[in-house]
Length: 68
Image (tube, helix red, strand yellow):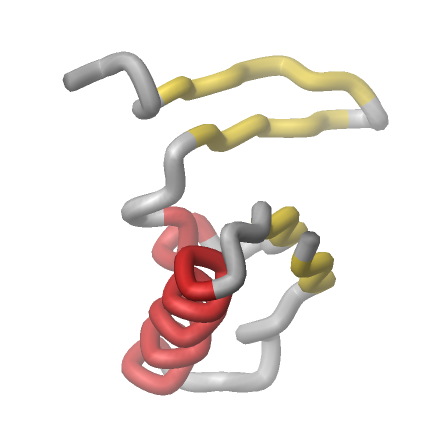
């Protein structure tokens, strides 16, 4: 499992997307899951499941695994 807390916080958009692509590639190659915590909504594109948390509670979940 890859755990990443704000991995793109200090990066511009292009480099942030490059980091996220690298994390996804590493996860696929190593048959691993990625857990990313971010405030940057631009960085969640392409993930299978996205949870939105507010005040310590899950307030929304999007599941793209079964979406086809």
